[in-house]
Length: 344
Image 1 (cartoon, one colour):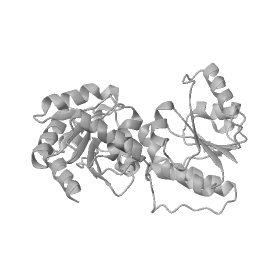
Image 2 (cartoon, one colour):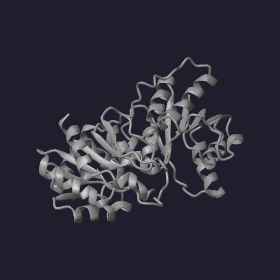
Image 3 (tube, one colour):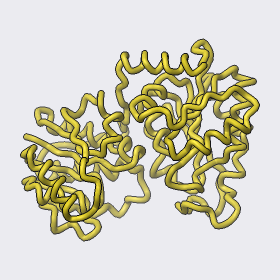
Image 4 (tube, one colour):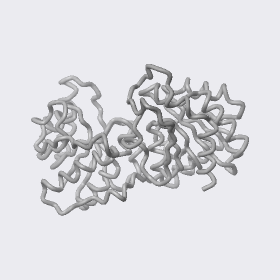
């Protein structure tokens, strides 16, 4: 059997569907599984043992012409089954036009007619972790295929492999940038490309950098996308420590390898936090407007810190008032939790 799996378009969501991908591999152990994703995600999954191949999207536009072009590419794979972890109408249209025989996904955006097996979104969607949302599709597929399969939700593994060659290159890159490999390496994710309200603040990250550099003798390394260069530059400028800024100068595969070499990664609720936890780094996420029940990183190596306020989680991209959910979290509080994790 040839299976095509369309994964979500955000880093965090892509990582949170890993338990479902593992479950799919367990269910169809002899199938050929192709991961269908945007090009940036290749770096995440290039060493993944639960897939056989990666097919990247080439026609990014949302128009009819782009959809048909992409469908022709997909049709060449002659897939028997596709499972859509995305919710968009276009992804369903692509696999329908491509002639994939069996198409399962959530019935959203009026796309149910394009699916052979539309699934109603679960009533508990906002009350459980996002990984359950993706796993529910796999379990529904098993039920409709009359397969004896039940996932153990106590074993939610989002782990990803980074091979030794990539890790060696990451160490060399860190050393070239000025990192003392004999000392703890603490990474910061100070940005957030899709929401300003999720940002803890440059001054606070700078204060945390100074505390960790002084008290833990830690290297401080900033990571992020090109869209977050300005945020990291302000953290570096406000800090009194020798902060190493790699924001915007790594691709996702290299960032992933660098994260695997870190002793701790401290960040806002962002995609790199999920990636850090997935590759084994201790990860501390500062939550404010978003819901940690839904989107905290998987794994026992991940922890969260938040200050309860009456308006959180609001899920707003911009705070209309005083950003109290984040401003009331002090650098001292995050430093204390960071030290606990470093010393654990």
